[in-house]
Length: 477
Image (cartoon, rainbow, N blue to C red):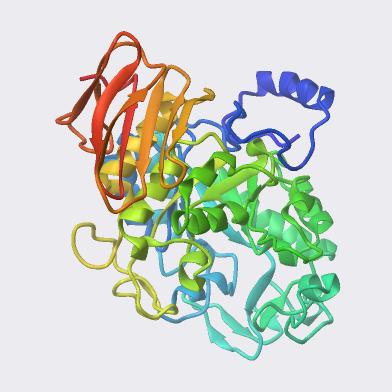
């Protein structure tokens, strides 16, 4: 059993015993409106992850203090912190040169200060970890911190023997050997079956843990045999540290996310795909969003991430009001561990963060420029509070109009309405909430909009076009 960050050790034995006693399938076999807890454990006020893509360490620290912690997020996920190739494009952060904690996003000292600042704000840190590969074949030069590298030589880290024998790019994703031994878009593929490479990767992850990192998003896990990743994790000083794997499962492919649950949780990409499909069709189908997918307590879920917003696999900020609705659903429905994505606007899919140069990125600026700053949106902050308030409750009082208007409660602690149509809708809704006056947390951050629930659990409201309503017991008028 994987022990996640901040699970008290005195509880570990009990949790292990319970896990051993249960015979659990890898995919959901019951309706998704169950009571399964999200995969990521609570840290501070909650367990919601905020993916701060390409934010500098100083920017993350300031945002943890001023916004992320007060809003109730449990974690921030930060971009890869190791030294990488030079270049203004975002993907340079995913081409390692060495495992020095020096990158376009800041220095080792700034990274350590960021972790401490977030921790003081009640927010843990999950680092994006690149373990499958190094920089692209055929490249040479010096990394952003000055480390020399060439095709088969990364000074002080790896030489030719540390890379797999296959020297061609993956061309057939139905071929397991190719996917896990050949090059992903020309990147030098590490020989993760090697004892030396495993030890080197474990030492890098241990170094980040020593700086206070709580867990890792393992990049490109699909391209590393699951047994190799288990062996790498077993080499860590704390082999129970939280991992969540990026495994882009697709129908007909031999490698699926369920293979990787031996060393961590896994991202459920089909969740984001279904949100894109249903918000472009009929959201009544979201009632069954967890069916046929990874078990809720092992699934990491999101509306979008840095890859899917660029390749069109998911929704993105470009969807406007529907994107806000999708994040409202993400934070209100009890399936998986939710990650909210915060990046920047782009027209060129290779474009780096606003102002990026070959060796640096300016601090993020919200309210100006191209940063989306999703975590500051009234709806997202309100729904993080909603998610924390209703944790552990079942879905109750489901209602839909047969198409694009849905409403549901979370036990007696919360109630949500989503209107995915171009017209405002006014009607009465039946809840299980106690009688009283509630703040509509997606309409305002200061409780300037309230709804009154009567003694029988009913209230009447007008839901804006492509808008939502959300009430919970921790936000009373």
